[in-house]
Amino acid sequence: MNLSHAHGDVPTVTARRASTDEPKLRLESVGKSFHVPRGPAIEAIADVSFTTHENEVCVLLGPSGCGKSTVLRMVAGLEQPTSGNLTLDGQPILGPAQERGMVFQAYTSFDWLTVQQNVEYGMRLNHVPRAERRERASHFIELVGLHRFANTYPRHLSGGMKQRVAIARTLANQPSLLLMDEPFGALDAQTRWQMQELMLSIAEAANTTVLMVTHDIEEAIFLADRIEFMSRHPGTIREEIVPAFKQGRRLRRKEELIGLSGYDDLERHILQLMREQGGDSADH
Amino acid sequence: MTVRNGDHAFRQRWFEFLAPISRKWRIILGSSIWILFFGLWEAAVISGWVNTLLVPSPLQVINTLYELFAEQGFLMDVGISVARILGSFTVACAIAIPLGVLMGSFKTVESFVNPFVSAWRYLPAPAFIPILLMWFGTGELPKLALLFLGVIFFLITLIMDHTSQVRSELIETAMTLGGKRWQILWTVVVPAVLPNIVTSMRQMLAIAWTYLVIAEIIASTSGIGAMMMRARRFLNTDEIMAGILIIGVLGLAFDVMFRWLQRVLFPYLEQEGHA
Image (cartoon, rainbow over the protein chains, first blue to last red):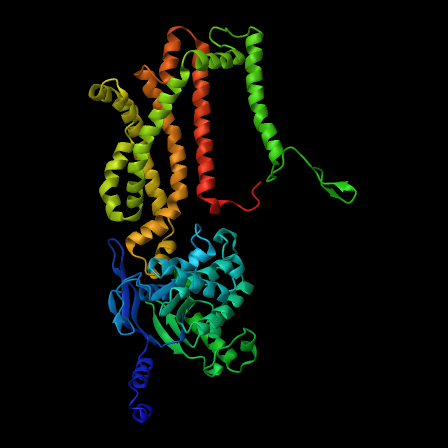
């Protein structure tokens, strides 16, 4: 506030400060129930509230069946909540839109389009002029390291490369929030950590806010500026965890995690939460 | 052909689980069954084992086929048959493809149309022949209508099923990229299902041939089937067999054409290193 007083004649500074203080994404008491025929309503998600700020990487972590993917799909606008509010930049979320691009665990490259055409696809839907489309697509293809494969059909790409196409396609469309539903879950271990490092560097380069779902504890700790840990029956936020040991900075390489004091304690803590929550997985 | 491991040769046997076969051998084996078939047929005729009035020799059939084309204007009959197939099949596709895609895409369209379509599917098309003859007489219309009825309901169902199997993640990806419904229909659903539509067309065209022959045998004075029924009256078994042969060849030709179309239209489906 002092800052805005000192520069009171520059209103844009004030405005920007105000908007960064305001969370980008806000969920307030979001709930979702399913109806099964001739049965009681099943409360899958109850009272989920959290916020995500501009340029933050926020990770939804939890045992399988806790409804973290459902929460992400509601943010995407692909599913409707039965109660509560979801807003992005203060605007209510009423359906899927370009501003909330999503990367899925399953491969979603369009087989009939080349890598270049795949990355241009979102911009084509939104009537971005051809020249700009070309340029932006090339930029993001370069960023994910696929420039040599720009004219290749996805069929000839490995799983990791297909996910890179999906990420480039989503980011080239300039969403204000990038949603990822276990995007590296189908990849082998080595490709997975390479993709995690790549994702961090791209999120940094593209100034993107990320909301990501995973059940991989190490992945969550490595990527997250903030972790929302969810529990089951019904799915709700159990604990908000800020990996303080990273001291507010992002890591570049996976091995940097190992030396950091505080990493072991955090992993132990989350593992205990997982055990508590996921112990009765047989009944699910 | 023999693969060696030092001084030892790898085992090469005729019958091996999971072993691939070279293109050369595939062609050799594929042709030999036909050579065997015609050889046995010719041998049976030459040895006098069968009555040549009922079973003419394969060479005789080929000879008759040549005469049919050269002297009796058989090309006209073939042309009429092919035109009937193409005409009714085009109309059937023009209705079935858009309708099937819409039914597979939107549950409201499916709920409205499918109860009707699935009921008609269980009615064998030939059941309509008497009424078609009463309505349309003996011109081209009853034949075209039979072909149309025999194909359309199956084609709609096949295309609907393929469309509803387009992976939801593809559609949802386009939705979160900001796609409108009709944009997604045109740029995701249609291209995703198109290879399967062509396959369905290929399968249903084979069925269309069946109904064509039925229509021409029952009530027609032109076309391949009608020629065969004329030949029966004069005990010209060689002409009947020439007709069967030409139906088979034409069916095969359409199939080859569709496979070629598939390769040209969907180059992205080509497997790498496909032998």
